[in-house]
Image (tube, rainbow over all chains, first blue to last red; front, side):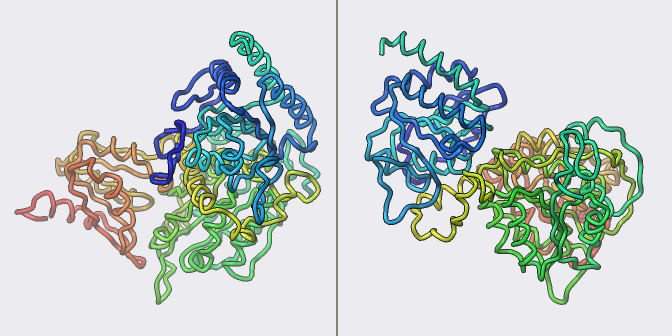
Length: 189
Length: 399
C-alpha cells in the first residue's frame, strides 16, 4: 500500500498493484483511506508542520506564467511555504541531468531520491508537476526514502503519494492555506 | 475547414458538442444496417477527431479508407497516408504528442510490422485509439478471421478492449477516446474486433444522430507536456526522453514502466461506467459449465448456451470486454459456480486460455479447457462447442 517507505525494490512499491486507485471526485486519500478533502488538508498541514526539513517541490506548471491560473497558484504556493515553514526546491523541468543534479537547488523526477537524501527531507508536497512525472518520482521516493509524500494535484490525484488531494485549483490552495494557519495555531508552531 | 472554427458549442464541422454520457446513454438512437468498417466511420464521425493516419491495407477492412472520406467531408481535421505500418504508427504518435485526438486502424501482419511503436505509445502516455480488426498472422497470408495478433499486443502497455459485434464496436470506439484521455489514465486504447466477421458483416446497429459529437481533446490535461514550442512547460519535450536514456537511473526506467501499467489499472472505474461492466454474464448464473470468451467466440458461446439449455444442461457465458486491464475480479466472481470452464478461441495459441488460467490460479478449482480452438479463417460452429462440452462433462459417455 502507499505507506511510508523505504519499500526497497522487490516488490517495487506500486499502489495500484495493491488495489489503490486515485480517489473519486470530491475526496482525497490518506495512505490507504479515502477521506474528505478537509480531513486530508488538516493532516497534510500537520505532517508538514511537524516533519524535519519539510519542503515544497513546485513543478513547471506553477513555475512559469503560462496562464492566469498558474500565476495565481505561484503566489499562493509562496504563501503556503511561509505558513508551513517549508523550504521550496523546484522541479523546473524533467530532463535527466548530466553528470548529476545539484540537490541543493533542484529536484528531478529521474532521481528525486538524491535531493531528498541530501536535504534529509521528511515530508514534501509535489505541486504543479505533470502527473506522469510526479508518479514516476513518487514511486522512486517511496522505494528509496522515508519521506512522507503529498500530491496536491490539479487533476485526478496520485495514489503513490502518502497523501493526495485532487482537483486543486487556486481557490482550493487558498482554502488549504487558511486550514494550515489554523493547524499551525493549534500546534503552537 | 479550420480548427479555428471550433466554438464552445460546436466543433469545426458544425456538430453540437456533447458529453460522452449523453452520446452513449441519453441521445435518441435510430436503427441502421452496417458493416463494422462502416460503423467505425460513423463512430469516428461523432468523436471530433483531429487526425488520422492510415496505411489502407484493403481488402481486410476499408475502415481507414472510410475515415479518409470523413476528412474529405470535413469531419476529421487531418488525414494522410503513411509509407508503411511502422511509419503510420510513428506518425500517429507525432500527431498525438502534438495534442491531437488521433485514430488509426490495422490488422494482422501490419500490426507486427509496427510493433515497436506500441510500447512507445504507452510510454509516452498518448491516448490514441487503434482499431484492430484482427485477421491473424501467418504465411500464407489470410484475410480471414483469426486473432493471433492480440497475443503480441498484450504486454505493450496499451489498454485492450474487445467488441463482440458492430454495436459494441460503435459504442466502444466512442468510450475508448473518453477513457484513454482521462488524465490519470492517458494511455493508448486498442479496440479489437474479429476481422471479416465484424468488419465485413452487415448487422443492425442503433446510432445516435450525426449532428452531435464529443467534446474536443484537451492536451493541457495530459500527464506529460504536449509539444508546444511556444509555451512552457510544453517546450521541455524538445529533449526527447529517449535521447538521454543513458543518463536516467535504473529506478526511473522501472518506475516508468510500473507507471504505465498503473495507468491502465486506473481505467477500471471509467471502463466499468462507460462499458457497463468489464465483463457481461448471460445464461444460468449457478451453472457449473462456464464459457469465458471475447469477441465473436462469445457470440458462438451464447449460441451453445441456448442449445445446451434445450438439452436441459445449465451453462453461462462470461464475455470479457476488456483484456487490458484484465477483469480479474469480475472473472473470479462470475466463475464461482464453475466446475468446467471452456475458453473457445479464434487462434492456435490460446492466449485467452492462458490469461484465464493465470488469473484463476489458486483461486478456482474448476477445470479450464482451452477448446474449441479454430484458426486461419475457420468458423466455430456451435456443434464444435457442444462436442467439447459433452466430451468433458460426460467423460465416460462422450459426446
